[in-house]
Length: 109
Image 1 (cartoon, helix red, strand yellow):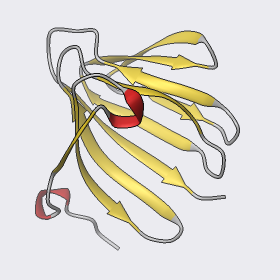
Image 2 (tube, one colour):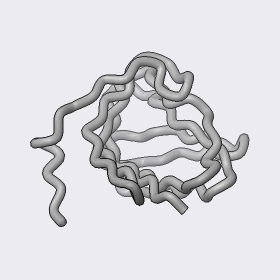
Image 3 (cartoon, rainbow, N blue to C red):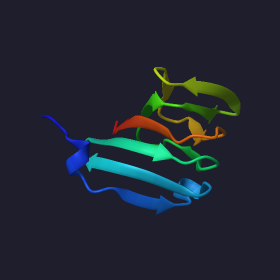
């Protein structure tokens, strides 16, 4: 299956998971998985949340994000990947002066 995110309507979600500003995403969802191409403007965040029934993989496309994973701060530059296993907590922040863009995959387990 090929997913063309340009043809999937963008959703703008304020304060996603209790975060700051807006989370912009093109999202494909089925019963087994969510796949997103998303962005955060400078100062925007995805709030801290726990993956109770799934995990999450974030691949940074553009810019540098900051992940707080189980209270450990990690820098996530373009070309790198963050993995949050089932049962763990994390958040994503844009502390830079440019928009960050990333793919996120959330498989149900």
